[in-house]
Every structure is written in structure tokens, then in C-alpha cells.
Image (cartoon, rainbow, N blue to C red; front, side, top):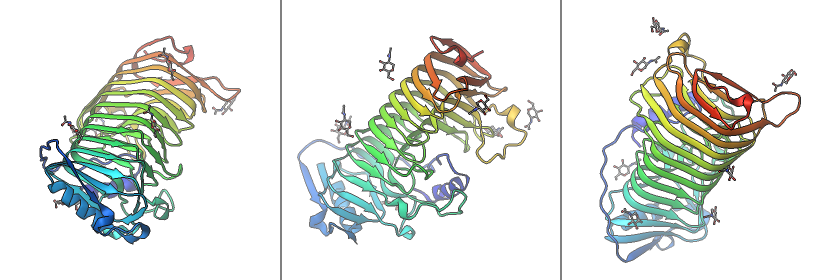
Length: 407
Ligand SMILES: *[C@@H]1O[C@H](CO)[C@@H](O)[C@H](O)[C@H]1NC(C)=O
Ligand SMILES: *[C@@H]1O[C@H](CO)[C@@H](O)[C@H](O)[C@H]1NC(C)=O
Ligand SMILES: *[C@@H]1O[C@H](CO)[C@@H](O)[C@H](O)[C@H]1NC(C)=O
Ligand SMILES: *[C@@H]1O[C@H](CO)[C@@H](O)[C@H](O)[C@H]1NC(C)=O
Ligand SMILES: *[C@@H]1O[C@H](CO)[C@@H](O)[C@H](O)[C@H]1NC(C)=O
Ligand SMILES: *[C@@H]1O[C@H](CO)[C@@H](O)[C@H](O)[C@H]1NC(C)=O
Ligand SMILES: *[C@@H]1O[C@H](CO)[C@@H](O)[C@H](O)[C@H]1NC(C)=O
């Protein structure tokens, strides 16, 4: 990504927790046609499967060759461990490329080599990344020692940037240094049957982040990291998240919204048939109290969600202010509006009494919020399940009485 994005990224890391948007870059992608596939096996291009010898050049060469083929082409990564640094899989390509990942790619820990990402696919149309193999970011060796450490920006594992029509399936992602998968300024993207694992105590290891993208489907995935399992940032529309088992982690979120100038609306997001296990949050929408841009998050549906001892199962927070540096703006935080949000058939347990927290702004109340069959109960003894709400307008039915806090 562009260096402007690096600047954003550094700032973002220091302030932690929300996803930076990529700097705009010109679009451009080629049309691919069908036909016979040609395979580029990295072991025939000089890659060594010992997990120690740098095989970056073999992979980069395989991509370059595949990208020039007309019709279909495959980059084949056979079984074995391959140590690789940053890979720039940029298009436009003539071919519809499949990256067949049978082996394991190990992300080099020589941080000086990286810009913003490890494997970046950009300006490409029609690509499949599939196989039983693993993208191992090897983050454990470079994770910051403390949350306040003034550390260098770390690379995301797999980034799609200006990509149209991509499928990522079957693969396993492990210990990304930063986000595992980032879908940025892309459309018609499917992520399915993947598993994503990173330590529970390392932030910014989001499973899948979607930003400025449309028609994205994330389905049948097991995700456990130290940050959001799935996060859906500004400018996203037509996103469906189904069949996710999430935990540990911070849950599934829409946001953060309003962090930067010129952010676009988020609309038509469906999160369905998911299980959250001991996550800090369940499903949440968060926008900055001091939002820098004016936008709307609307038509968001969270349905058939099972909570298992989730600390904060249902959250809308229009006063998100992680650094606590939003003095005096509180009563004016009206830049991000949240409307038409449905929580339907959400069951299970909360590990704190506060099962629902809908904190909307005075200046811009949340509207059209529906709680339908929401029955999440505090798992502990002594205290009663409760909801804390302000300025949340809408209707509730079939839900636990203590949770029906809408006005
Ligand atoms: C990737 O390669 C393309 C084309 O060669 C170039 O324009 C782009 O700047 C490169 N990106 C990175 C992150 O190095
Ligand atoms: C999307 O990509 C796949 C695989 O490369 C290809 O078979 C399919 O035809 C593409 N779909 C469209 C609409 O171009
Ligand atoms: C879900 O993904 C797993 C791999 O993570 C796969 O084994 C399983 O077949 C998939 N299930 C469906 C219904 O596709
Ligand atoms: C709301 O956004 C506008 C830009 O669109 C900005 O000028 C203004 O400062 C923002 N409001 C707050 C409270 O940050
Ligand atoms: C409610 O969601 C659960 C999954 O959490 C699902 O098994 C059940 O069928 C759903 N009920 C309805 C009425 O859709
Ligand atoms: C909040 O808005 C009111 C007018 O709506 C304005 O008078 C006041 O200065 C604003 N406060 C801040 C801290 O921006
Ligand atoms: C539970 O209730 C007790 C008083 O009955 C209170 O002291 C305690 O802080 C409550 N726990 C939580 C997690 O709210």
C-alpha cells in the first residue's frame, strides 16, 4: 500500500484498536477469460521447502509468470515449509489465477523488508486462493511486549486491495503480525472454510477486516485471536458474515466508524448463525465520539447468534473514545448516525450482568433499533441480567423484559 497508509498505520497503532483505511489509489484491473490452466510450481523456480531458506523470489517469479498467461494459471505451493518475505502480487493480470496452497508459508521476521503487508494482492480480477495449507505470520517473535510499547507498524498477513471476484477458501492462518486478512477497496469477495488462530492477548490481530468494500461474504470460519474476529469498517456494503465460531477475541464488530475524514457509509450488513465463545464483546457497532467525518451505519442485522459467556454480548457505542481524549464533544457527537439495526434470536449467556449496552448520542439518537427474541442471561449468581441504554429508539418483542430498554 501507499506510504501515506504507512503513516496512518503508525498513528493507528499508537492509538490502538481500530482499523486504518487504506490511502486511495487508482483502480485498474484486467479481464480474464477461461481456458486451460498453466501451473507454476515454486519448487521448480528455486523455492526450498526447509522453512529456512528464503524463497521469496521463487514465489514472486511464479506470480509474475502466472500473471502474464492468458486464460487460467496456477501458482502451486507444494507441501513443505517455505520462508518468505513480502510478496507483491499485483495486477492487472491476463489470467484468472489460482494460488494452490498445499504447504506452509512462513512470514519472515526481518521487519525491515516490509511495507504495510506480507502478502498483498492488488489490482487483480478473478483470483482463488485455496488449499489445505497455512499462512503462518510467525507473529509471536515480534509482537509488542506491552500494549503501550511504542512499536513499529507490523505487516498484515493477506491483503486484497482493489481486487474484484476473489475466493479465499480452506486455508489456515496463524499468528499474523497484524490483521490476518484485510479486504480493502474490493468487491465480490468470498472467504470460506478458513481457520484463523492467534494468541488471545495480542491486539490488532483481527481475523478478517473489511473496509471500503462491497459484496463480501465470510462464511464457515473458526476464528480465535486477540482482537475482532471480524471487523467491518467504513465504506462497506453488502457484507454477510455467517457460520463463524468466534473466540477468544473481541467479537464481531461494525466499526470503528468516524476515525478519519471522508469515511463512507456502512450499509447492508448481515451477521447470522454465529457462535461467540468467551469473547470480550459479542456483536457491536462502535463510532468515535469525536468522529472526523459524517456518515451513516444502517440496515445492520444480527441474527441467530449464540453467546457463550460473552462479557458484553450486544453493544452500540456512539461514544467510542479509546484514548479518552474527547473532552466536551460528548453532547455534540452527531457525526455518525446509526439506524435500522435488528438484533434477532440472540441467546445464551453473558459473563457480566450487562448483557446489552446501547449508548447512543443525545444529538443523534440511534433509530429503528429492533430487539426480537433477544434472551441473553447473566451466567453468574447474585446479580440480575440488565441493559444499559441511552437514546436508543425502536421496538422490542419476545425479549427478556430486563433487556427491552428501547425508547
Ligand atoms: C507492487 O508492484 C507494483 C507493480 O510493479 C508497484 O506499482 C507497487 O508499488 C508494488 N507495491 C508494493 C507494496 O511494493
Ligand atoms: C470469478 O473468478 C472465477 C475464478 O477465477 C471465475 O471462474 C469466474 O468466472 C469469475 N466470475 C466472474 C463473474 O467473472
Ligand atoms: C467448513 O470448513 C471446514 C474447514 O475449516 C470444512 O472442513 C467443512 O467441510 C466446512 N463446512 C461446510 C458446510 O462447508
Ligand atoms: C464532524 O465532521 C466534520 C467534517 O465532516 C468535522 O468538521 C467536525 O469537526 C466533526 N465533528 C466532530 C464533533 O468532530
Ligand atoms: C435461533 O438461533 C439458533 C442458533 O443460535 C438456531 O439454532 C435456531 O434455529 C434459531 N431460531 C429460529 C426461530 O430461527
Ligand atoms: C456543541 O454544539 C453547540 C450548538 O449545537 C455549540 O454551541 C457548542 O459550542 C458545541 N460544543 C462543542 C464542545 O463543540
Ligand atoms: C453484583 O452485585 C453485588 C451486590 O449485590 C455488587 O457488589 C457487585 O459489584 C456486582 N457485580 C457485578 C459484576 O456487577
